[in-house]
Amino acid sequence: MTVLLSVQGLSKTFGGLKAVSGVDLDVAEGEICSVIGPNGAGKTTLFNLISGVLPPSAGRLVFAGRDLREIRPWHFAGIGIGRTFQNLALFKHGTVAENMLTGRHVHLRSTVFDAVLHLGRTRREEIAARRRIEEIIEFLEIEHIRDAVVGTLSYGQQKRVELGRALASDPKLLLLDEMVSGMNREETEDIARFILDIRDQLGITILMIEHDMRIVMDISDRVHVLNFGEKIAGGTPDEVRSDPAVLEAYLGSKHGRAEPARGEAAAHVG
Amino acid sequence: MRSGTFKETYPELIALTDSRLVWFWGAVLAIALAAAPYLVNAYLLSLLTAILITVTGVLGLNILTGYTGLISLGHVGFLVTGAYGYAVVSGRWGLPPLLGFAASGSVAALLSLVVGAPSLRLRGLYLAITTLAFAFIVSHLIIEAAPLTNGARGITVERPSFGGLSFASDQAFAHLCLAIAILTLFGTLNLRRSRIGRAFVAIRDNDIAARAMGVNLHAYKLLAFTTSAFVTGIAGALYGIYLSYVSVEGFPFLLSIEALAILIVGGLGSPLGAILGTIFVTLLPELTRSALAMFGSEAEALFSTGAQELKSILYGVVIILFLRFEPRGLVGIWHDIRRLWVHWPLRF
Image (spheres, rainbow over the protein chains, first blue to last red):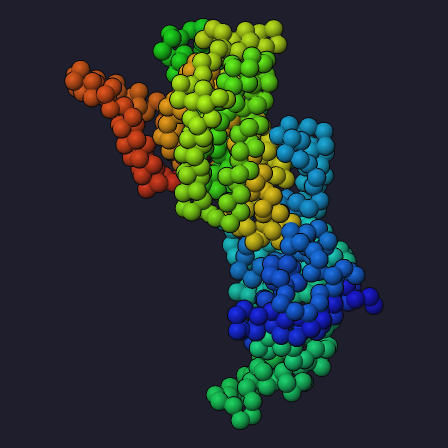
């Protein structure tokens, strides 16, 4: 399997705070890869580094053979890195279709002069973009809300729209930041099915941050565990589940302070 | 009643409107406006021309403040630059008027790169203050650059004639303003449904997400400034011709406030709102004058002596009232009326 994304010794410090320090991980093409860890472990910071929202303090990021330090932040979408955000970052005054068309931005070429006239190239390009958007709308089963204003939709629907917007850029790697947080069981299962379909039907590699252990353990090929900015474990779901370092991070050390009841904690990890 | 919208082709999905009625009534309105100059008296014709020019300018500001969410108090700077660009090129140098119009837009657009640069770092109130300073610097520069601009004495501007058409009469000039306003309207509507318009709105709604979608924030903010300034510059040229005399005094800072008031009253980010807002705000002082006239000639005299001050007060009051009671502006009220019309007697 070829490595699509390689993270080597990646660090990010904010003043004296080490949000991410010396993280190594590889994501192979066609994998579903999860990043887990307690709150404040640096997962979202890691995503912000991979998607160009923040520049790294040290270390290397190689995506499809390219060093990401040489890529300008707004070119990340163009080279095939798409993402969703933890707390929804939709354009809430626009319709669902319009949000997804914005996700298509990197594939469109018209200049301001073409755009004002809306002839020839712009028109063809817009029609082609709309056709692609409709495919994604169908894929995500959101036909009924395609013309709804995003701000009026439910949280779960908005999450799905954001997923659609990320898909609209035809990414090679899709970063999903806590897709199912705040969702009920049924919605979570829907999303899990979409993630599998995205990988299997669209051939997109997935790296996701998730707190919901059921979905992590069910659909991930590999799981990486962060704690206090450092990677403490990585491997298949089964390996991670039985790793002593992971149990310690989630449950506290043996000599630790308030220790949750064993059974409850094991259910949380396992 | 329509039970839903059924579209069968992709071009239908990206059309400006799916309603034939909108096109029909739009055409009727355009024809009525084209016929109006021959039917109304000189006072109403002058008011109509002013409204058409203001619509053009406000549509320009709407690109920046409505779409991209960058507040500019300096648009009067682009307006005066456009007016002088036209006056110098076509008035003083005697070059063809079309070159004058091209110059009015281009000079304003070039200047916008200078004032747009701070917008890459500043936003909200800080950007508003910076653009405010820009407006005053521009009028000062124009007065200082006397060899080019005639300084404080100003430049007399003739009505243009080009392409075998003369726009010397009031009627013909109103037609020119109408044509440019319609072109600007369709231009901004098309811009809004393109990748560029979506990028502008994305910057307004969520700039980090916009960048993750591949929008170069710096480039697009500057682009918003440039397109906005270009359109405003053209409106400035028209306004200069309308006044028939271009001077710094003809472009008071109040025009910037008036344009913002129009956007807020009409509904930010909506070209339809820009038009409704322009009509409302332009007619407001006239209606106030008529209302005051009912209290006798003394009250009316009060209006003519303190016209500028009363206008500022009126703009302030309508901005406050709309922000408090109808933040969506007139376009919001319009949508409510339309919904009521379609769904009555049901509430929604």
